[in-house]
Length: 542
Image (cartoon, rainbow, N blue to C red; front, side):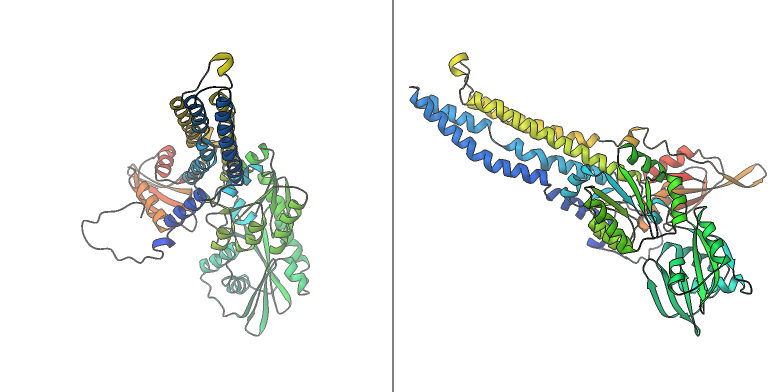
């Protein structure tokens, strides 16, 4: 539980869908613990250096004692020299240089909704020079809607839609949800489907009645020898406008095309622009129609697009980029993205994606926001820069301190280090390293530094429903990122209901939105502040 509610009357009847270690909060805690306990490659290097450093220091201390004894100085003097060398060279700062920075860095990532599963992923991210993005659910909202329906002459639109929805109801693809929703809106019944089969990268096959029915892209139609003629051409033309055409066939004949459009996330263009500004190549990798993919590419500013790929081809493309020396981060949300996420140098999963994708990834973006991809990379760069600063200080401190402690400057300048001063200097070195690592708590990504994402346009599209007897009744739809469970819905609902002027609230986890009804004008800034205070991000108002 993150928060609590007090009921002064009545009772609650509840059903827990996830308890204990299965809850979202428990998973976040587990991931952060795993990250902070793991070691980055640079930390392993520091451990190797420490393994050599310690015996070398002990040898220097012994040699210093022997040399001063041979020079005729007393045993007490020589022993104090040896103790000073050992005290001032204690490798505490060296040991704290990396784990402290990693601990603070992963914690800062978690506070920004970026869950880093391992220290190795945190370090690797700073070398990323190519980011590969899935389209549906990553660049786009992943909640498409039906925009066009074309039917073969003699085939009623409702009949075609019924067949399409009956097949798509058995699919988990976001595009399928749009068609099913359209059929439900038309109050159509679903037909029984036998021998259902999903063909990766192509579509669906099933038996409705005595006829084989197909639902998918043009590759599926071509593989089954279905020639759509003008209908197929019209479907392809829709793709130029950024719509995804889905073709439906029955008994070996194309019966219709349904065009589905998926809206680009409000922050996708800004997130991609920020990656490009960092000198990172951005590639869109999708199984969608090439024309649709090209339209989305132009809209968001992606450098290059690879379309109409099978799930296994996504992994091959990642492997190809790695073979030419690229450090690749893959960002995806679906089952089809899992092999590519696992293959990439850094796999980044969208928090609203499938469990398989999240398990395959090294980093999870709880806000499902592409701006957080650049934030993760910038955080990685900041952590590695901090670690290098810490290691530099630790080594410079020892390079300067050990000769002084060994008495190198005693004969010419009479400089002799007291062991107690050496202990103080050693403690100061450790404190300096820890303090430098703690500076990461004030890390801000570039877009956060620019007025905390205020550059994202908030479109004022308020609809006035009624005006009667001076009363104002308005409706606003708030698109919200960061909601991952039913508890999140309750938090958002409560935050909005506490605002004076809001009459009713309807929060939807599926659409990541909240519909609010107002009886007086409430500024958008007030709504935005309430959402952000609750721990979520308001991306747009409609």
